[in-house]
Image 1: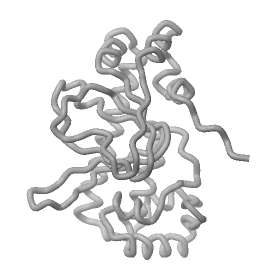
Image 2 (image 1 turned 180 degrees about the vertical axis):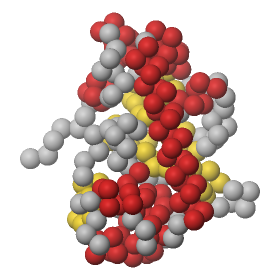
Image 3 (image 1 turned 90 degrees about the vertical axis):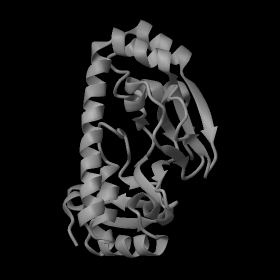
Image 4 (image 1 turned 120 degrees about the vertical axis):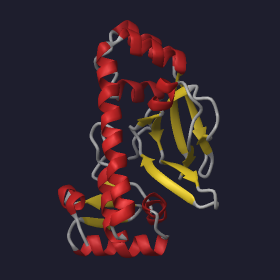
Length: 228
């Protein structure tokens, strides 16, 4: 028996940041937020556009990326269901500096800028959440720079998978990740074939198991500290 898709309201009420909001604050959030469907390959956000919303992933998977002057795609991170992004651009009131593309059919939640700023002013717990969010994001990107500059592809794939299990940035992610080898390649900067080789190595090491349609994580700490 298949479970029913999560509604926008269910998604909002399940977030970490909503748990400390008052009932009045939550009522405004539920009234102001809206949902959008983005097909695979479509843009959730475009570089250079005005940042009008804080964005959460209800269902699907997106990648945050940019293109080099030579036209090479550079992926910064992936955002699975439960993750929210874009707070930095909202706080700085600047145009978005990256593209966000759907790696599969994706449902996104959008909180208008006015609601985001109102919550920031009205709710101390929400402000604390954002401080933690920004700190975790900074740590994630520092790790990503280290990974891209110093680590081999096998280790990058391991760290890429482990990074998806940040309990603050991506709460509620199950130990079975519904992600394809092609998607892993996009997020770790490897071809599908090379990502497949890395996953097979990690499976032999007992860190994960390749299931149909996804990857079952067996040893998260092992993935975080794996070094080929």
